[in-house]
Amino acid sequence: MPSIGPLELILFLAVVLLLFGSTKLPKLAKSLGEASKEFKKGVAESDSPTASRPAADEKVTMTKAELDAMLAAEREAQARRDVPPAV
Image (cartoon, rainbow, N blue to C red; front, side, top):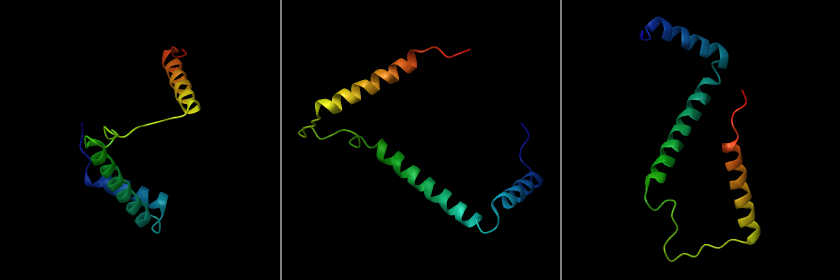
């Protein structure tokens, strides 16, 4: 697979500059950096062993309506997975 050379990189940057304009590029770069930072933070939090589990002595309750809604959503998701793809 050929590598990206300096000419291709300059051409790519010129196209990006034309598409987004010089005023929006700093905003775009800043938002990409913030999104990357948030993603890494989320991954680090989900890797911790106690992030998604409630404490052992914490009691979790839900109403019958909440349970029914959760079960209905699970049945719908299962039905979608069981349907063969259209050809």
